[in-house]
Amino acid sequence: MASDSSTAASIATSGGIDPVTGLDAADLGVPAKGLREPTLLSQDERLRGRPKLCSDCGLCDSQFKTLMASSCTFVRQHIPDIEQRLHGRTRRAGDELCFGVFRSMHAARMQQPQPGAQWSGLVTSLGAKLLETGQVEGVITAASAPGTRFAPRPMLARTPDAVRASAGNKPCLSPNLALLDQVREAGIRRLAFIGTGCQVQILRAAEPQLRAELGLERLDVIGIPCSDNVTYPDLQFFLHQVSRSPDTIVHYEFMQDYSLWMRHDDGEIERVNFIDFPMDKLDGVFPSACLSCFDYANSLADITIGYMGARLGWQWLLVRTERGQALFDLIKPQLEFRELDSAGDRRRGMPRYIHMLAEPPGKPPKLIRKLIAFLQRHRGPRGLEFARAVIEMKLLRNLHYLRTHFPRFEARVVHPAVYQALAPYAQDYADSFGRPLDPKAATSVSDSKG
Ligand SMILES: Cc1cc2nc3c(=O)[nH]c(=O)nc-3n(C[C@H](O)[C@H](O)[C@H](O)COP(=O)(O)OP(=O)(O)OC[C@H]3O[C@@H](n4cnc5c(N)ncnc54)[C@H](O)[C@@H]3O)c2cc1C
Ligand code: SF4
Ligand code: SF4
Image (cartoon, rainbow, N blue to C red; front, side, top):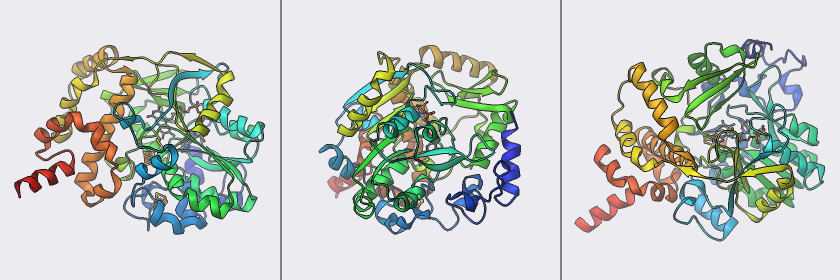
């Protein structure tokens, strides 16, 4: 395989001329910043002129930019209101606090895995099926930018093959909502959208206006869980820090066994334990928006399709809405299932994690790291408990980040279920940080003192 980073670098330095097609990014009908492929740009270049928190969801590149103030989740989150609209209720106590409202959860995978897919290809198979059966006229998905494997290029797919060709993660910020302009130009009334949690939150917040302005009769939302996304140059930096051969990686995933698996073009799989990541070198790699993100599980989608609540090799599905049920029924005949299960106890390790957030320790010696990785793999949370643990840890980490860097945003950006989900650790949080976890608790204490 050609070196992904060298080809991408050549596009980046060639002013946006794609070496594969010879076309300028602007000729390819994609949202462009200047003449360059937008998803190849650095954080600074992409987010210039944007609010402090922006995940480049694409809305502000479209004619619907005027909806930013009322729809952007980093201006104000609307999760409880949208849940009321979608489900007639907000989250119940228990798993919904972390996972969002759902009707059913499954561990499943395609009976015939799709080549090139991230896992078994459930997401793109479902998108393709919607076009095949004529239920939608277009699917917004993320293909690879020409000449790269991992840089996304949002695409309005009109054929099942085009959706299938977009399989596989492009683990970088992708301005998918910019394609709403193409939806309007093409006169599409029945649309499916595949995207990350921030994109879906913003799409849902803008949905009433979009339905009216685009004349949308149907909108199917297929969500993927998402955390710690990056720009393409930062992704390459990350891969150079963790891999012994970053230029030959063709697929990678943060696995449920607490390690990163990187498959190289010769088929070899390189594994690096999470505990061995050089965190000291990764400062500044993750955009502020992704460190201030509180919807890991993509809770406002009709159906969420990920992997982290299922055992290794299986995918995790959350069916949320009536539409989500119809999507699940559509793809179900092509799936095989296994039971969802849960092992370990995340609550035992969480007080220590909170303490480490408040007072970051140095990196332990190699032998201790080996032992920790072993214990995580064999005694740590597994199955659904792994998903709960990872989501709770990211909620805590992101709350800490927001309070440290953007404290005035907390009241607008953090939804109430975050405090409810983390309530079991309120005392540990107060002990470690010297302040209450839930700001309302602080108010009620001072109210009662007053
Ligand atoms: C940055 C990122 C982080 C993720 N983190 C987790 C996680 O922590 N836990 C978890 O369970 N799942 C996570 N996922 C989702 C997971 O890796 C798989 O994408 C999902 O399980 C679907 O697999 P599949 O084989 O069904 O998808 P495929 O059939 O291979 O299709 C993948 C779909 O994802 C879309 N896509 C790829 N990259 C992007 C992008 N950058 N932005 C928007 N859409 C994109 C493609 O357009 C395609 O439609 C993450 C995905 C991304 C992009
Ligand atoms: S996240 Fe989207 S809506 Fe919000 S500022 Fe960025 S591009 Fe605009
Ligand atoms: S981590 Fe959150 S903000 Fe960043 S791309 Fe994913 S869903 Fe969006």
